Image (cartoon, rainbow, N blue to C red; front, side, top):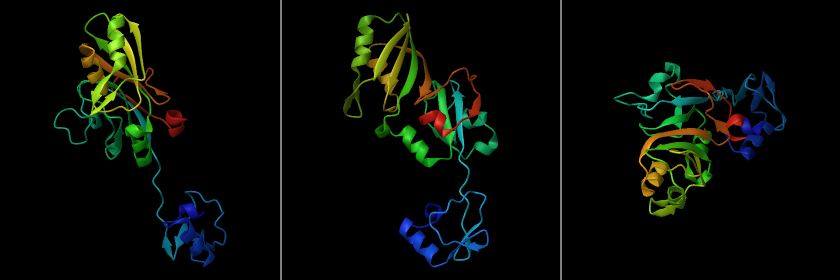
Length: 218
């Protein structure tokens, strides 16, 4: 029960023991009681605000769209229903890149996916201007300096003559493009196909679907 109150655990338990918490018109006496979003909870006679339901959306971002809610050109929010305009986009992609992007109102989730310190793996398909040689793969795998520190991909694997799958753990701004440039490769197309456990799969370009936290980070 105490974790639902707008106070520390100890303070919440104290409020309950003092009889200041009412659940469904009954004075609550046990901090261990489980409550749900359907229960009406009063603390000192004031209704406890209900937490908003959490939303997780997977989106296939097309090339040419900006990850911005204030884009002067084509923004990703223009492809979503208007009632999703207050969601946060998670896993920013530059305007020239396409692929998997999340939208959510779960701040903890957004931070976990986006911040490099959590090391959530991001997987990209990199299509370049020519056949990728063994030497290219070696240079791509060796990485380059980004933000004052040497960084490198977790995994580089050739898929076909001009196509490579690149896996990174930090997902820093333009990271994969910087790796490609350091290896002397010109990027023709960059597609993010997976974040964490969640794969883009056959989600059509410009389309979205509801997903869950478990599907993404389990």
